[in-house]
Each structure stands twice: as C-alpha cells, then as structure tokens.
Length: 445
Ligand SMILES: Cc1cc2nc3c(=O)[nH]c(=O)nc-3n(C[C@H](O)[C@H](O)[C@H](O)COP(=O)(O)OP(=O)(O)OC[C@H]3O[C@@H](n4cnc5c(N)ncnc54)[C@H](O)[C@@H]3O)c2cc1C
Image 1: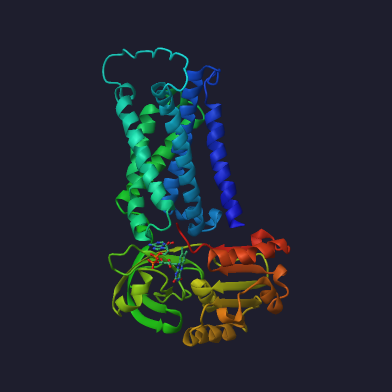
Image 2: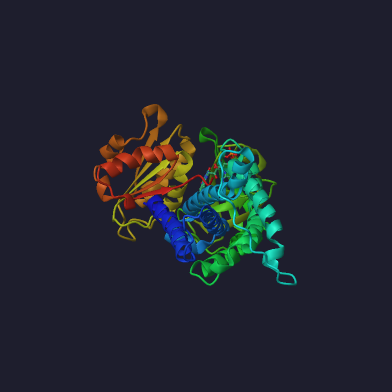
C-alpha cells in the first residue's frame, strides 16, 4: 500500500511539473520548425530534470513532516531514489537534444535544416543572463557527467555503502552547479508563467537543502547524546543488544520507530530500530545483528561508558492499523520492531488487548535471546510462534495453520524484502487489502 502511495506521489509530482511547463509555453513552441521544436524540448527536459532533482534534494535532508503522508523516512528515501533516477533520465535527454545536432553535423549523418541566425543582444553593460550563458552551459555539461558517475555508484550495489554515502554527499555540490546552470539558461519567458513560481520555490528549497547537507546540518535538531550502560551479546544469532542512557533531551518515540546511531567512531551513523519502548527514563536499546562489514565489528568494539550520538526517531511502522486484530511477522533481525511493540503493549488486565500473533522466522534461534521475547509475549498475552530454518520457511500455509483469520487482521512485516514479497503476494491474492500489509523497508539505498 505504502509503495502504491509512493508511486502515486511520484507520478503526480512528475505530471504536475510537466503540465505546468506545457501551460507556460509560448504560442508556436511546437511549430514543426526543427530548431524551434528542439529548443522547446531542450528547455522542457531541462525543467523536468531540474524540478525532479530539486524534489530529490529536499527529501534527502529528512524533512519529518513528509513522514506521515509518505509512510515514514524509509519509504520516502525510496521516492528520493526514483526522483533522482528520473531526473537523470530527463538530464540525459536534455544533453542529447542539446549536443545531438552538433554530433549529427560532425558525423555527416544527415543534413539538418539551416539554423536561424541568433538575435544578438547588444544592450550595453553587464547582463547576467547574457554574459554568463557560456559558463552556465559548460558548468551544466560537467555537472551532468558528475551526476552520471554519482548515480551509477548509487545504483551499483556492490560499491560499499560507506563509500557510496561519501560520494553521494557530492550530489549537493552538483545540485548547486545545476541551479546556476538552470537559473542562467532557463527561458526568461517562463518566470511569469505557471511554472515560474514553482521553479523559483524548488530552487530556494533545493539550495537550502544542499547547503544543509554540505554544512552537515541534516537532522541536527533531532540529535541526542548518551552513553552505553549495558551490552548483551547473543552468540547464537550474532546479535548484540546495546542499552544507552541519554544525557540530552529525547522527544520520546513510538514502538517500531528507528534512529540513526553513531557509536563515536569514524563510521557514518547507521539506522537501527529502537528495540525498547519509551518510558520517559532516558533509556534506549538497540538490537543489532552482525550483517556486514561494520556491524560484524561492533560486538568487539563497543564498551560500557562509550559515547553515542542518536538522531531520530523516524519511521511510521508503529502498529496503528485498521483492525482490532494483528499479525506480526519478523524475519531474522526484523524481529526488533516487534520487541519494542511487545514492550509497549499494555498488560492484558489493564486494557482490552488487540489479539496478536507474533511469528519469528530465523535461521538459528539463540535460546537466551528468544526466551526474553517469549517471556514478554506471555506477559502481554501475545501468541508467539518460532520457526527455525531447519524446520522450513514461513509460508502462508504455515501461518494459516496458527492464524486462520489472517484476512481479518492487519499484517505487520519486517524482514528481508524477498521474504516479504513471498508472503505479500499470496495474501493479496487471497483477498487481503494492500492497505493492511504494512512493511518496513530495511534498506535505504
Ligand atoms: C529502517 C531500518 C531499520 C533497521 N533496523 C535494524 C535493527 O534493528 N537491527 C539491525 O541489526 N539492523 C537494522 N537495520 C539494518 C542495518 O542498518 C544494516 O544491517 C547495517 O547498517 C549494515 O551495516 P554494515 O556496514 O555492517 O553492512 P554492509 O555490508 O556494509 O552494508 C549492508 C547494507 O546495509 C545498509 N547500510 C550500511 N551502512 C548504512 C548506513 N550508514 N546507513 C544506512 N544503511 C546502511 C545498506 O543497505 C548496505 O547495502 C535497519 C535498517 C533500516 C533501513
């Protein structure tokens, strides 16, 4: 459902810019004259590329007011990705249309109609739009080449995440170059037309966002500092549980939200779900699995008293559903939001409990880790089901055996994307509305 909403937002944003640009065209922009039509298309593809890249830039700085309409930061980072890719597609078309005629002429491919003479601007004095045109054109071309390299690195999954993160920061510089290029070269007749104010706003917000990124101001107002007070290792499933006591203010969080955690080391902050429920005592826990280069080193590097910088909370995987019946499914370390969810549930004798089944599918269960979950689940009246890989995969048939009423429930899923798809598809085919399958995207790239 959230992905459908994202797709809708993406299509709507692209369509709005396109329609506003079409409404802003002077009469005769597509007259059949080769050079005039080509000029219109060069400008149009430029407008589209600039607008979509500006929106991507704004989303990059984690504006929290987009979280509710777009379903959380993990979701709108997906939208950021689609906007970036589409901006690049329009930028490529812009580059081909702009330089194509000179390639055709040079390669003698076919004969182009004669180019109409340019009207010379002979007004005296410095005219920013006239005198900087050549520089803006050169800057735009080089910015396009940089954009191509940065997008390729972002999409090349084998390129290590930490280098991707560093290279991606250069996007802010590339964006500022594109602002300069667009401001100077955009057709001045657009400014008083419907597209003009929209582009001006995008330029202002996009420039602000890129400056925030360059001066490392992203998320500063949502940062808190604390120290590690406890470290619990679970060797059976390579998980380390870290408890932190905050020394600065924390706005509180809902179960299922996540934060960017920086353990005061050279590594960039990583996103981890907060596996504790908020009790106003300044304590947060994170349950971290050794999944990659950095997380594999954590168990050996962390120590009690170590400083931690936390930015958040983010996310809308917060168990607010349509139905008075929920099924929670955690795959591997995807169990973390449910641990927080369990802790945040009222005791069954205090409130009318939502009937919940929690399924935990894992390669190999660590007895100490699992027994803690079982203990809280029992206390909170949640039915717990453990499935280790040696006993098979968690399929819809398996789930149905324990929760035959799944069609009446809200499904909350957190785990590998392929596992999510393998459950979501038959559930939707079996009649579950897409709006009731909630999925955390554990991947930000
Ligand atoms: C919303 C969300 C919640 C998460 N919650 C948990 C949790 O509770 N417990 C847990 O163990 N894991 C969680 N993860 C996954 C965790 O962030 C990655 O496993 C971890 O960052 C991997 O880092 P690595 O360097 O060890 O692995 P690598 O092998 O270097 O990277 C593997 C993948 O991890 C992601 N990643 C790496 N570094 C970063 C970074 N700085 N920022 C964002 N993503 C990065 C990338 O997708 C990358 O491809 C969560 C991820 C997201 C997006």
